[in-house]
Length: 306
Image (tube, rainbow, N blue to C red; front, side):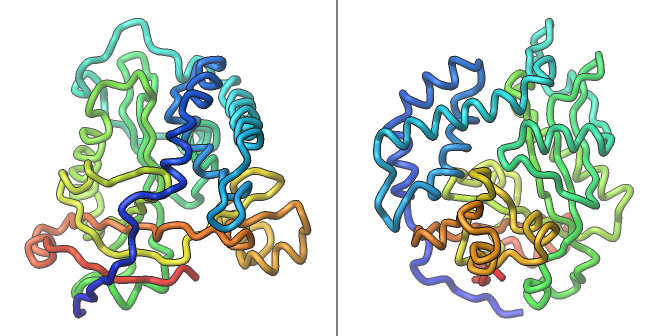
């Protein structure tokens, strides 16, 4: 497969991120009230802000403040039943080697995905690993899902079939987890997959630059750029962010125009407000060392979001 060069497509920095960072004191204050990490609340604000925008016009200051308070309340109600999960253990963990790499039960993974992960959605038909403390508390989670991105099949490297690919769909780490926990967990995952799933040659994962994710840790651990997915859109149902997969499960479509006609003002989408988001980035990791040798330069494919 030939390498497709990308023109000037990705912005150096999102204006929306700069706008939110300029109002960080509001986010910090609301996060402090409910004892959560301000970055967690910032993610929710960045994810939901487009529903208050019109084209490149940002939300009015009073609307922004009200939305931050609303999202803080939603987050507080979501995690409160599991307060002990996010509370630091009595003994401080300073090294990920003090934890045990384990396979995580589906019901536990679902709680973290729904209650703590910023997307607040469960990936079905998946399996998860994590780092567990000596008293069986889960410090971090990584979820692997089937490769269902059919429009990318023709772009897979030579020798890689769709059945040889898994998607890293969720990564989460509690604030009290030891430093470098995610990198250590991913390293353990690679070892486990090479031993138990020799059919898996390649991993893919998404990076969303609109949320200020930069993929620096991925690049440092031999992940390579696979491509960009254009026409990024956010959708909301009853003011809550909802993924395309959830929409398809519930309504058999993720088309924003069809859904708005069907659901009215209950449904909102960034595209309906003329908000242009930066393309999502896709990164690849080759569990097969020969593949990494052949494709370590990465790719720059451009996909259109279906």
